[in-house]
Image (cartoon, rainbow, N blue to C red):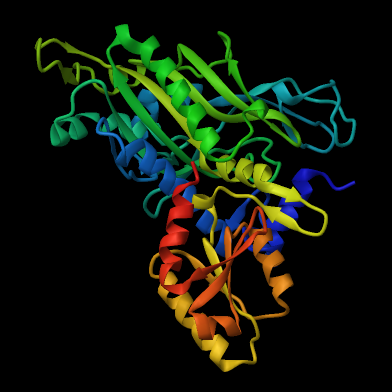
Length: 427
């Protein structure tokens, strides 16, 4: 029996959401490329996140930081020393495993004996300049947070923000994971969306609770059934080295309950280490201190994955991807009823050209109309617009809803506004 994960992987490849990277050369383990539809879905999620947490708030500003940073950043942040996982290796087949994923004392691949655990640093390193020597070593960032910390004073000086306020960022991070897998759930190259929210120490519990609620609301906006989401308190000894409190938002994936997002209270650990002199002066009291930090972290690739898993639906005679309208790659698809009737094609093309000035729209004149409907259902397109012979006389079209399959005749002149209004009803 094909499970839900296999169906999503198949759909993603077949319909142009996500491809195995460099597949014509045998691929690269756990590396993926987002195809024409996948990049639109991914960008829509990024844009909605930025709109919600940056554009619609006056207390958060954004930055876009470099992937490579001075190695002293990672020394100060503790990553060179602390950012590691316990690793065991099979003495027979030499496959490596994370110690916390071992369920028996033998190799799961060949039943060979395992080595004693040793620490494995997750940082991916490279070299700047022509010589591959220690002095030229730099690291691809394993998280995107540090740029927000090292730019704290510059952001403060240029925006004149006062506590509480946040700095947001989106972008690539890299981790030399021991056991990546489960499609785009865990890869060595991935996208993060997060912000560092700076507060006074006495207020951290209040803001932690606030951002916990905001993260719940974001997950709902992705169309996720909250019964599948579990908020897990991470105990002492298992949290990251910088965290005093962490909650993981875990999701019931087809392969088990695993992490989706994280919410951490990083105290003043990062700013205190990067700025030996206090970087913040209270504008009212003049007191200098290191602000404390609440950090909501959102994995973008995992956001894409759970959005696809939640949207996928098999009905009697069709597969439909019930994506939230604002996240769908195409907002509408335009069809001439018959491809061999120039007058229908001409009008359909005009409607298509007009609509795509405002929305991402598809045009399709292949095969019969029923197959075209179902093809768009499978990629999550909310609306299909059919131009027929009545359209030529009455200046109207058939507008079909993806979820209900209901069809209405609407005026061509009002079509753009009708679609825009329906899209705004997503929430």
